[in-house]
Length: 87
Image 1 (cartoon, rainbow, N blue to C red):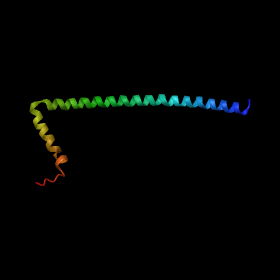
Image 2 (cartoon, helix red, strand yellow; image 1 turned 90 degrees about the horizontal axis):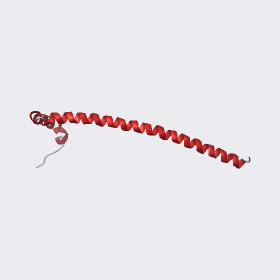
Image 3 (cartoon, helix red, strand yellow; image 1 turned 30 degrees about the vertical axis):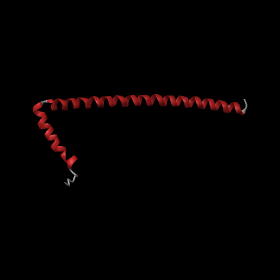
């Protein structure tokens, strides 16, 4: 075997090893990504339950007007805190 054949064999082996490593990285990345998506689904499910609970509380006519008025008073400083009315 001359020098060019040895270089070709080393090149081929390095390409095979690189493809194997990239395949393992892709598989691990896929599993991490699916775990992230499952976590997001659980979070969204929890938020949906909280929002349905809040919606159920707001849908009752007796509580909705008082609750909305309380929320409006509590958050009014966020929207009107820095405005200067010059009429």
